[in-house]
Image 1: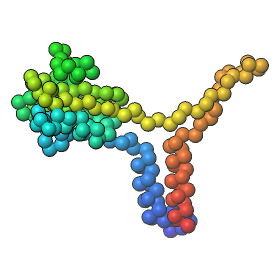
Image 2 (image 1 turned 180 degrees about the horizontal axis):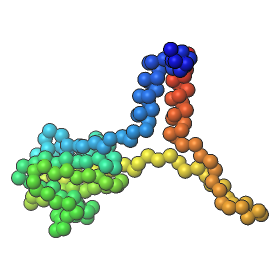
Image 3 (image 1 turned 90 degrees about the vertical axis):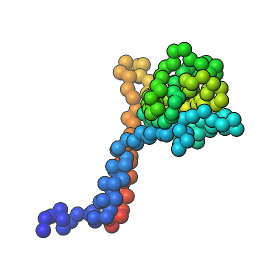
Image 4 (image 1 turned 135 degrees about the horizontal axis):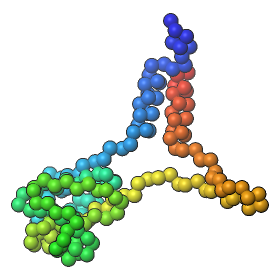
Length: 179
């Protein structure tokens, strides 16, 4: 029997639990593919559903690198500016497809404006604004001003990253479970 096996403070369950928690902490979240309009797809809404797509968008949380998937028949999708969205027309859209199966990657935070390229559909409510959330980032640590008397170079306070703190607490938790 090896020394490590005899005196290991880890038991199988806490070690596996620790590795699982550690993997969640270090692997970034996977982007999401949203099907616009869910099972209804992208089509001109009925008169009583004029704000259907903006309601759909407001019930979802969009992040950078997510994609929106438009499925439609005999229609098109255009990504446009805010002004073109308001006017329901775009002579030069930022994005245009009419293949029935279009995917748009949300590559930045902010607002994205979509309308149908088929005449009259946008006016019926086939348009949508998607708000992509800013990425969450930890606050920056305050900086220490340079020591004017000694002429010392500018230095920053040492900061402890959330990754380090996360590892510390997971290790502490794993050790606690093994006792």
